[in-house]
Length: 535
Image 1 (spheres, rainbow, N blue to C red):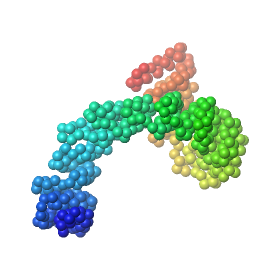
Image 2: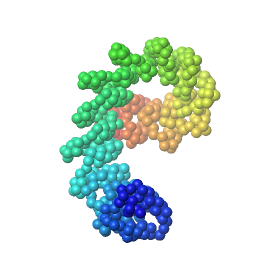
Image 3: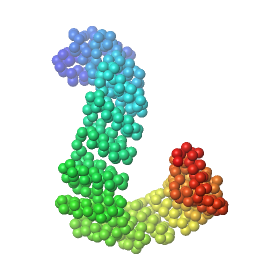
Image 4: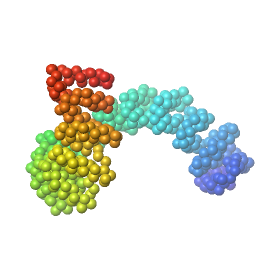
């Protein structure tokens, strides 16, 4: 029946019948041999015979009967028949998925290695396993096996190299592709560009794009401009914006919003206004994203009057301000120490139907703590809990910082313990807040114990933590302890800065050493040299 169906070009019906047979007899002893013999006895010619065999192989693979599929393939090869390329690809893919590389390679050798798709499967599998060297060797030796790597094979290796940070090697491979007659496509080029972008090498990323021969469209330019602005490379973003205009592409609303955002992030509001005016002249309306960017920028530049004017302008234009805009204004007034205005905007947002979130409350708590209103900050925490929010690390860190600055370490430690009870683990910033207060209060024994606790918890101290401790020990003139801490910094690839140097100078002065500056410089040079850092 199966042979008849295949002969009549009713392959779909034949596959259904084969699949049903396999599922019915899959537990039967030696079922693959029985089925093979049945097909062999009933065949009339070779063409449908090979097709039927390939059907059985594919159906065996569907139910994960890999050994039966391999048995069929072996017996086909003995008869001088080859399974279909689809069946070959499926069985090799399954073996690779099961990480049976030797078995898969042996099977590939039986079929002949001239099949580019099959060899590419191996390259991809080696890349997934992280064996870039083996994948590279296989790709460059494909011609020896009679096959030629295509753009997809190269892209697999390019992607693996870029993900591992080996972007220079990926870029070299991109040029190697062209030399071997394989033309890179937009996907292979994008892989290398993405690799450079993740490393912050925007100049290299742009260079790859320009040399690729692909003309960037407005979406590619906008992507680069947005990313450059987000990481603070506003000059480079502006150059790219001007280049986009020069090549005949008209900036859209997204282009202008991105460049405005870049200048707002560095609080250069005059340049932000310039691009805003240009945007409005071209007929683009300000949306909520543009308003949010500008209000945040004015708050960052401490021009809260202009920020409030923009919010009123939004209301005139019937654009409802969201939580991010209100948080920006509250944060701006809070940082200026004007808590009365911050609470006014908190009330205003509630009246406008915008509910405060955990960020809003943390901003208010931070402002109150900075002003020394610790009791009031506790009241805000209580309100936060009543509204169904859970205080987070930032909330408790602010309060700990306030008590620590005021020298009330008993309350600071109580908050610390309360955090642990609530399952909120203190982070490096929390430790730094408490550590800074202990060092300023010259309680170095407790500061050292807290530092050891930080290390024991698996947290990685940053430069601020190290400098706080070093500054604390410099008041005691404890040069050996300072040297030990600098050694620890260097082992973690954290390098001393001007604050570290000044603290060491002060320690030598405490010990009444003549030429304290020279002594400090010599001590740091010795420590750098000891840790293999080139001076």
